[in-house]
Image (cartoon, rainbow, N blue to C red; front, side, top):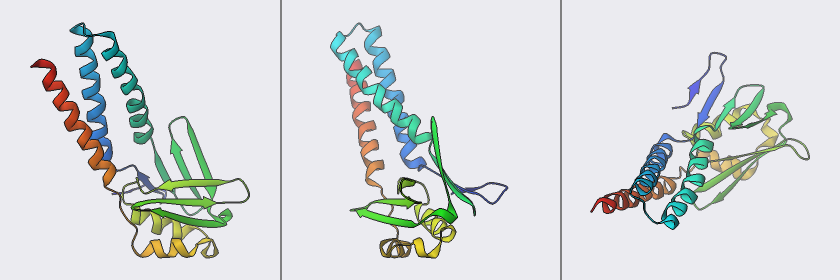
Length: 177
């Protein structure tokens, strides 16, 4: 569930159902890397695992560190090493783009101020309703109003990460057999 800060701020984070298997995949890949180094496996195998570890770890850190803070005055997107905020009153459009079950919300404030939010966040339907409640009524596009009725929740990314965990478990088991 989304958190509420003492000041009435709603906080939305990336779904734990995605982060848990991703963290497990990172840990399993690290374990395989250590095993390969200890067993003096071919250098190419170690290089491939290092090449896999870097983007997986970066994705995990980036995803775990993301959050959206919404209060009456502003919408703030927090990410590792950067953060962006838009004043609610300055939002000129809250647009929605739907590609299959993937949804991207774009908050636009002026010429070059924008914020893109995907449905990777937990409690996405609440997030959409919260955004619609704090931005000016005139900022809501027809697509966004449509989305308010039934925001899709994306689960295929969670399935894909669990599939990768199963594959990595197989590789780890095969390493010892």
